[in-house]
Image (cartoon, rainbow over all chains, first blue to last red; front, side):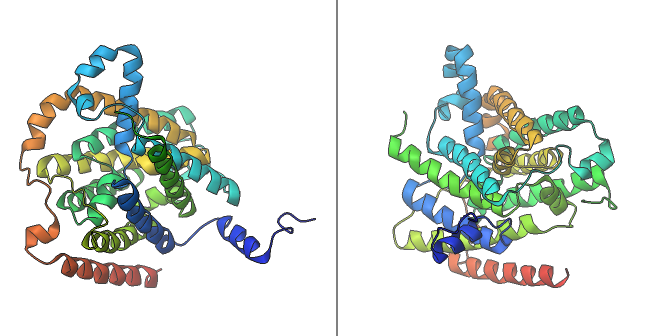
Length: 189
Length: 178
């Protein structure tokens, strides 16, 4: 018996939609927009990710030097604890995992081809660059008061000046960095 | 200080949907994000701009009905400008942003995992300098929590309507030129 044949037609249709490999960017964008309505109404919070990562840093530091963390002005303002936003990030991991599993969407090559053509096949180099990129990204997000979600999407949808300014600066420097790293002739696949 | 269990579950549920959508939209892929900054693949821009337009109309409607409160971050012009510029460099080098990085790690991308570790370290470094930064850079040209309608002195719905038209025109142009 083929899998899914014991389902009603409507259920099969829903399953095939959920297991489709890719949804249109307009559909996904609309769903994320509606999800932020949900977040504002149910949790009185905008969608945001990077603060939870900063709180994670505080939680790690707490296990080593609790008194030091308690005296830090940043962690006094943003208490390192598991909260709604931290659970949001845990949820992102679960949701993406389930979606990838449902559609059998395999990860790209561990060293993306675009990167490989420019910097070679070394995994160590790729992982080191990703780590350094993460450090830079986090410093930028903290300076700006949020990341692509908290500032870029949630800020911009509230028409916040900070959100639109962040968006413009991130795109400008992202374009410059990408063309410097890979050049005009770069092949994506 | 800790939040209630139902509220934590609500966060997990909201995040689950967020991660599901990001994965289905293929925006958690190195190729797609790098492609956006090389102006070859406009998936990221289309997704974000649609989320902004749909989200904005809904959130302002909910606010008008008294069901939602805005959370506008302060327009710290210097800090946000530097932060955005720094963020763009990091995002291209890593190939993901924080949310899509977590989603990419769930897909099985190991570079994203290293990126998340880097983000945690970067946040810790920032926390060390927060005392100085928050009393200097973050105070320079701080306009407070202002919105574009505040700044222009134009009604919110005019700005939202203009944004919607601009987004639709851009999408039309992008889809035609492909």
